[in-house]
Length: 444
Picture 1 (cartoon, rainbow, N blue to C red):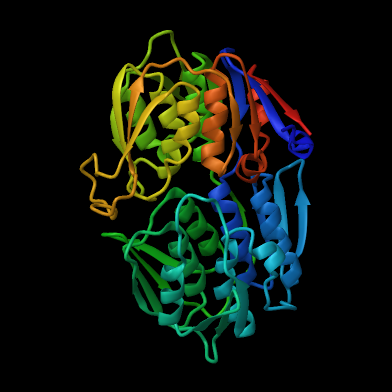
Picture 2: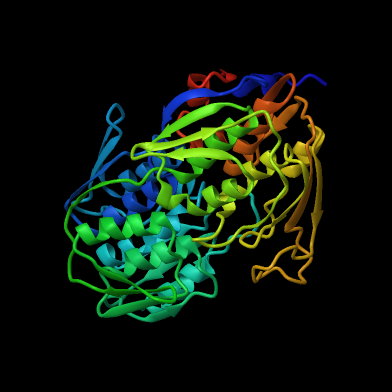
């Protein structure tokens, strides 16, 4: 049956087969900007962020802060944001905005420091498997927070000033590490985060916090030590470039046998990705301003890879790389060790002609939390297989980008729905692709 409302929903029309060529400038890191906005709540002074990506997730975070009393000035032309929270007028985070993603859990620490209490909705987010916030809650409780769950909200109290603690994370969770870093900066005494995540976006957050007056040190064996201070002040900071956008556009260059220069791509944040390209014989050139990715007419060889915490192969790179492996020669294997349910998107690739099998076994050597748990977290891809256009419904940010990549190298015109996920996580991705010559049209 014809669904008129569905046909009217915003979507992309993507016609494959055009080699991408030219230059685009990468945006600032999505995975850094929202946490930095939250960190600004720790001070009553003004913080200025530069090289910010204009994304849906940033808009949601700004709305949350505005409801709490922040004054925000956004300069879209120059990609900068000024935020000042001289006073917090409400410790209750709205469920209409806060429930849409997981960023609201990051507000507990700043609100407890500023108000002594916080009420936040239970968070939402991408459908990529369970991502509980128990690591966050347990760590905050160790620092003196009283937290109860009631009617879909977390009710948090800090009758006395939060204090330092030694917190051992069961897994190097990026968001939990960021949350504890922000909270510990104003806690009394010393906080030690053991088994902490050390991603480039975390280092960038630490740089901002240090500029604000926080005392934070990285130790060996994934330990971060934070000496709490009595107050933080305003600061200015330029964000690191988005390494996920870099990988997506690089893969697009190889899939379409193109030649793309990514200005502001940073080698140090992409080392494991670039090493994987070298293993496959794929060409790239690094200079002081960015990286050039050069495709050719040959199908790259198959490869085995495993996702891992930094400095390993990032889980967010797994989806675009899977698309690349559909065009590789031979049998490739991917072992996903970060999320247990991140291969759901492959059914759409199979409809396009890909040969993909999912398995519960750990097809790799990286120690894996999902061993013997029957999660489909290993993937075997046989290539090369020509892809054909189809209708695609995006379930989450990274899967959505992989769908667009597949459509760019497929025969025919694909129609892609659910593009709000793309616009949450990528700044003007369709425009950047058109700049490189892609045939992609946004229909609203």
